[in-house]
Image (cartoon, rainbow, N blue to C red; front, side, top):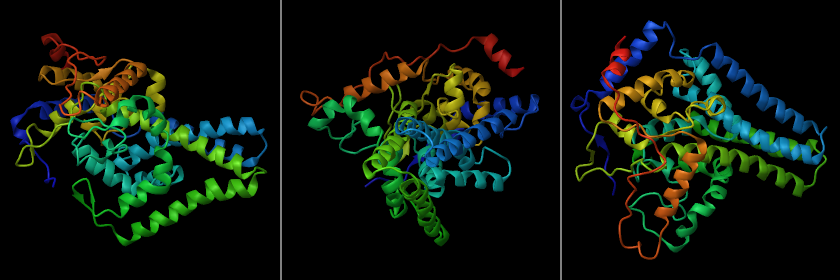
Length: 390
């Protein structure tokens, strides 16, 4: 049975205290809010208008079936983008300094098929605390028995092909979320090893907003559009395959790539490093210099900054990343990053292939390679640290 996890005493490391001081100084000296700025609110409007516009255009029935199918795939991607850019920040409380505004925008999560209350528990509380710890972080349990990503999981014959079927499997993530995952998580007594007891109003919210989603994306299309059942099912699946693949890839490339660790607690239930250092070993960035990725992925391609500063709006991650990288390397901590999306994807698939080996490796531990597409830069010289202090 898993024990409640504890981390080493934070006084054993000066890394996070130093980093927080430097990031605080950055916002103070530049007279910036940690929350959304004008650019962020433009992004918010863009994604909400894009989501609503695509939905209304499809439901209007004024386009040909082929165009409708293409728009449906694009709508699926926009559902993911709304989640990445708006809901994710709002539920973390980083979109605005006003709790009511955050709560208002967090409700848009219901419109893309997910429950914000359940997400707050599974992601904000459990995943952000117990990142990549087997049996505690359920975000890494994509499909137990089908996807193997740690040494401790028992390997089976089908997993030797997991690097081939992983992406199609990720495409099912949205369907699972809409019809199964939220309900399952809600009625578990524990999420990971976190005991949960839900307020009565959240039971109502779960079923009420799921019903609204089913009406919007199942009932209305069948009632308003002149399409057959087969056409509807095809469109519904395309919508969710596009949404699921977009979500699945982004989350996997942030934590399940070469170089990231999946640490186990000792016999006393303690992770033998402080929480912030644990995040540096279990989290990765990708495509950090790609402006398109930065715009559409809501800062999730900079997961290191997000995990260390979840209360900071993602619009600031690019600026503070320089501080995070220099401080981490000065404290001999890794800063795991893949320069491009392709490199991160290749790293993820290579890892799946390695952990999917069956025959000769069934009874032995699999070791992670020392060299990978992940880049870790050498520690900065004194001139870099001097610049940070200015």
